[in-house]
Image (cartoon, rainbow, N blue to C red; front, side, top):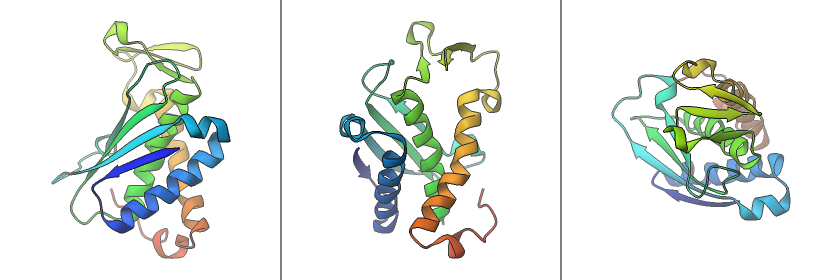
Length: 165
């Protein structure tokens, strides 16, 4: 996977590169990895009020099995590495969903309809936290974050603290 990073600290960028490699090796074949491109942008924000206000991800090429993505992570003051990696994990799950054709946005419907695992969902009728792709992303983010921090030997230091939302 090609990863381009804008903003953030040197340590943030280092861990995001390592996490992206960890994630892509786990979920994508070597051939598929070569096709995927992610641009990660850290955007300073004075306050992040809700978990669903932390970041967003969008595909940049086409809506069926896209390969180019932009992830924006909104960074409040005094943000922790745990927040950054957990947020990146969540958004990378969405990258996986699009790359593997599990999730498809239907642009002809002004993005009000998405298909997840061959089932259509009207986004006007399904709340954010009930969308199955969000359930998967929230479900995987904590485990992926823990596995990554254990791999880089930071688990004891970073995971004993309360969640920083």
